[in-house]
Structure formats: C-alpha cells, structure tokens
Length: 474
Ligand SMILES: Cc1cc2nc3c(=O)[nH]c(=O)nc-3n(C[C@H](O)[C@H](O)[C@H](O)COP(=O)(O)OP(=O)(O)OC[C@H]3O[C@@H](n4cnc5c(N)ncnc54)[C@H](O)[C@@H]3O)c2cc1C
Image (tube, rainbow, N blue to C red; front, side, top):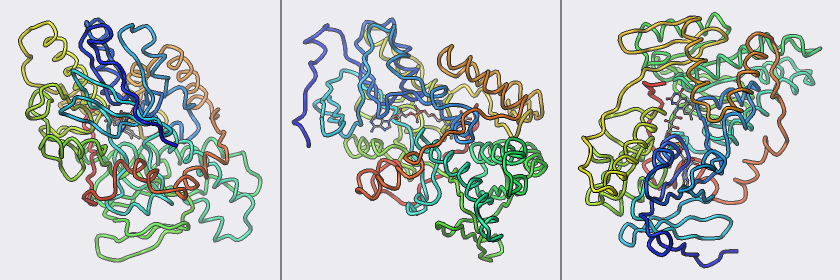
C-alpha cells in the first residue's frame, strides 16, 4: 500500500532557519550533522537504517567477537542531545534539484523534505562486477544484515560438518573462501582461521575444526596492494603462518551453492568446493550518485561515484554537497577518514554561508594512514613514511578503533569482548537465527526492488563496477 507523499513544512514555515538535509547516517552524514550542532540551522538526517554503522568492524560481528549493537548505535540516540537535529528513517528515492526537495520512502509512505542545503552521504554497496547472481551464494559485507547472515553461514558450516558422514562433504563444509585481499578480506580470512584453530578447537566431537581450509583469493598479484609491496608481503606471510591459504592472480569466474570457479594467471580454470563464500572484492556507489549526475550534468564514473568540485559541491549547485564513498575527487580512496573530513568540510561551508563569511579553501584530505589486523596481536600499519607491523601495530589498531566506536557504552562492551576473545579463546556472540541466514534469499524471491538496493543501485548501470576498497587510511 502506498500513501500520497507527505510534505514536511519548509524551514521558513517553522523556525525560519535554513534547513539542512543530510542523506545517510554513516561516517560522512553523522560527522556532518555533529559538526552543525551549534549552527543556527535545522538539520534533518535521513537514513535507510536507524543506526550509524561502524563498517570497519563488521567482520568481528560476522565472526562472533562483537555484537551488532556495539558497532551500530541508534542514530537517534547519538543525536539526542543535539537540539537542532531530527532523524528520519527512510530510503531516499528522489532528489528534485530545482524544487530543492528530497523524497524518502518507507513501507509505502513517501515523505518530501524541503532543503536549503543538502549533504549527500549515501555511501556505497557491494559490487559483483556485473555478476550480481554471485550474491546469492557469496554474500558481501556492507551491512549488519550481511554480517549476521555470514555469522550464521560460518558457524552453521561447522555444525553441518559435524553431522555429515561423507568425507568430501565434510571437506566442502569446512572450506571457507574469501574473495578480495584488501583490508576487509584479509581481516575476515584471518579471523575465520583463528575461529577454527583457537575458538572452536575443542567444541566438536566428530570433526576437527582445526583442519578447516580458509582460502583468501584475489585476481591481483598482491595482498593489501594499497599498503605497498613490503607490508603486503609481510601480511601474506603472516596470514599463511596463521593457516590461511593465499591464492593470488586468481580471478573468480563463477560461484554456485557448492563452490567457486577460478581462472589462474596461466589461464587454467579450476574449481574449489566450498560451502561458505564471502565477497569482499568491490563496491558500487549509491544509485543516488547516478540520479544526481542525470539531474545536474555532473560526471559519474564506472563505480557510480559522482565528480564533485574542489569544494565538494556539484556544478551549478553550491547548495548540494556530496561526501564520502559516493564522491569522486582526486582519486581519493573510499575510506572512513575521507568521509569524516568531507562531512565536516561540508558542514563548515554551510556554517560560513549562513554567517555570511567567505568560503573556505578547497577541500584538502589529510591522510592519517592505514591499518589492518591480520590476526590476534598482529596488524600492519602504514603511516606514509613509517610502515610497521606486529604487536605494536595491533595495539595501535585496537586503540584507534576503540576511539572511533561511537558511544562510551559500546566502547566499554567492545573492550570487554576483545579481552574475552583475544586473551581467552571465547567468542560471546555466536547466535544466529534462521531468519538471519535465510531471510535475504526469501526477500530476494519476493521481487526485484530488494536486490537493487542490496547491490548499491539499479541494474542498468555499467556492470563493470570498480574496486574502491583500495583503502589508504584507517
Ligand atoms: C567491511 C568494511 C570494512 C571497512 N574497513 C575500513 C577500514 O578499516 N578503514 C577505513 O578507513 N575504512 C573502512 N571501510 C570503508 C568505510 O567504512 C567507508 O569509506 C565509509 O563508511 C564511507 O562513509 P560514507 O558516509 O560515505 O558511507 P557509509 O558509512 O556507507 O554511510 C552511508 C549511509 O547512507 C545510508 N543510505 C544509503 N543509501 C541511502 C538512501 N537511498 N537513502 C537514505 N539513506 C541511504 C546508509 O544506510 C548509511 O547510513 C570499510 C568498509 C567496509 C564495508
């Protein structure tokens, strides 16, 4: 059932202050909203989900270390003390750049939000490089839904292996393939291996979880290519020492329920029988980028990112700011710091305009470095001139992630869960329900609209997509 669109009152009809609409409650959107806390404006944050998601720790939810609540606080709660901010749950489906309105939808209810200033920070979804049918068998990792489904699939594979009698079936169930050797894939593969070799070691009676195969695949010739050759090689060695089989120069050509087909650099095609496949290979910017491109004439690249001007606005539309994973500017990577700094920059531009001040200098991204964990007590850190790995890097990773988790309570419980998992062997978040495992497939069976949002945009986009996981910052 759909209702006719409800038009929310314009700013001058309520407080008389300029109305800032922010699309997205991720890093770009949330940090922009917070930066406007003291500004004489009315802020509306529209999010497809009711939470802010700390994506860098999704793999820990998927592998039972953290609970979803620890990395996804309610946006409403985060902004509860910010009197000039309102939170709206809904998916933005249209932006009228002439009338200056944004339309959001939820359960057939359409709401129109007028704006004076718009910040678009809708991020990116998973890209299967034109092979969206892979998604059925190889879930990506972009949302809480994805992480919980993967948790169910990973722990479920061990359960099914315990029941199986055919050795080939046991091997298939105990084979885990992670596609994509960027930071997400590396962290995921490292954690599954640790789960099998430490956490589950004594939990089963018939199978030996330590025999599980964890394969990290990439078409590229290196692990963590954005960290440089030396750190990438060290990460590869550390992964291998932790029981992960690293297969490079291996391009995925097909994925089905029982396995994955890969073409090696020498052209040979081979098959890996594996029940659990995880896609950590590429991203496609939100379809709002393409929509805005059509409406403003701004260029949109193959990964759906929209080209912004040096001040992060669109040509001819100084009131529309685009930040984070959706924007294309100077080949900046799709990382949290780009989104955070972009969100703050857009907020400052709005504050200056409202105060009648001169605009700021063009956006300048300050690269704070990059890091990825390989295993317990081991990480790699790239601070530009300083590159190192090992325990110190891991402690730095731990401290930084604790700092960026939103909310004291989440930080505290995450720290406790890390103590349990890293000092002990336990993982306290092993629950997965049937709905979490099968819900996505059931929803997909219901219709096309669901799948379009899942893969970051409609199907009529350039199928090539692009790997934007080339992270250069932590
Ligand atoms: C698994 C994983 C691990 C990562 N690890 C790291 C890391 O270690 N270090 C690092 O720097 N970066 C990492 N990143 C990248 C980082 O998370 C992103 O660069 C960052 O989140 C981008 O911020 P954003 O605000 O542009 O988008 P997001 O944080 O993705 O936020 C987008 C927001 O828009 C909302 N939205 C989308 N479409 C709509 C719509 N139509 N209507 C309304 N709302 C909408 C979403 O619900 C979400 O709230 C990782 C990403 C992933 C997926």
